[in-house]
Length: 208
Image 1: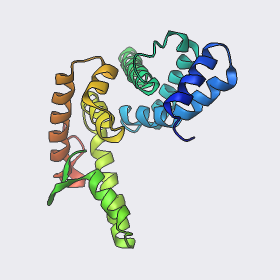
Image 2 (image 1 turned 180 degrees about the vertical axis):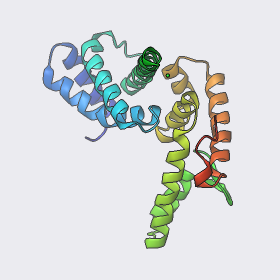
Image 3 (image 1 turned 90 degrees about the vertical axis):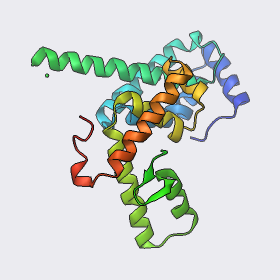
Image 4 (image 1 turned 90 degrees about the horizontal axis):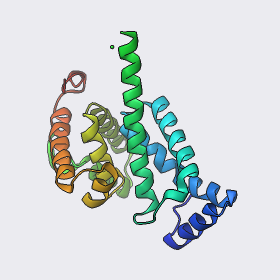
């Protein structure tokens, strides 16, 4: 579903708060893909975890919309909720394991471009089969490398470079100072560069 303009979204929020189930459904439908995409990134590409997190976020949002104060965008509120549910999910998984036992990154050889810029360049230049294959290979490498980053770096990079949020918005979502966000992005980029500079077969375990 296309993104809602702010005025229409505010109308739907007010209607949903008044008990309009169709308005609530429109709101959730407008944001569900982005919530899932964010959950998938924060969960390190684990589709099962992302689906569970996204479902919990949407259910929680439908039940707690009355507590949404409107001092930030609804998407920011949902991002924060997604980050919280991801933390809760990982904590639950860790406890379960314990109970039972236990982009801004340049591509090597092309330091002036990050993965997103290269992808956009290929797409804009009407690439041929070879360029398309190279772009897919690059995307796969970046995705694989991102999944190996510590969660705090991965979520900061995702919100900055995939969702295109400002440092202030990310700080509000993660409930940390903007300086902490900048530090996580900087360190995440450095580790991402290191992973991308490592041959694919040697990436596994690079950050342990």
